[in-house]
Amino acid sequence: MLERDDLLLIIDSSRAYFGCSINIISFVESLMEYAAQISRAGVSILADMGSFFYYDKLDYLLEHETSLPARFNMKAKGLCLYNKRDFDGGLSLKQKKELIECHGRQLMISTNTNTR
Image (cartoon, rainbow, N blue to C red; front, side):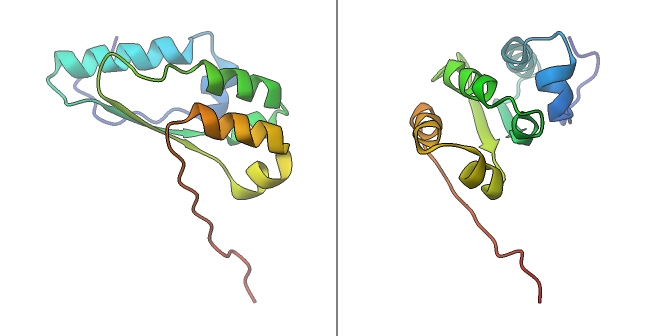
């Protein structure tokens, strides 16, 4: 459990998914419990999914994403962030459909990064 009244935690996604023995879902649940104890409204999570592509763990990505609870017992907002090139080029149509279906909503933002 956290010792201080920390309001921002930054965890390397590679370590969170592949480099530590902590179950990431259990960790998020403990953060939500801590937020309730310190009278916070909830927890917001920004999850960079790029490490799944970097380590070529796309099967684990699908397993992880589809195993996430549809709802937590407390207010939690989560955004799973994908690089457009990874999402478009690294996944089959079936995989993309599965990922989109397991999330309640989707928001796609694309920016033109070509420089001339």
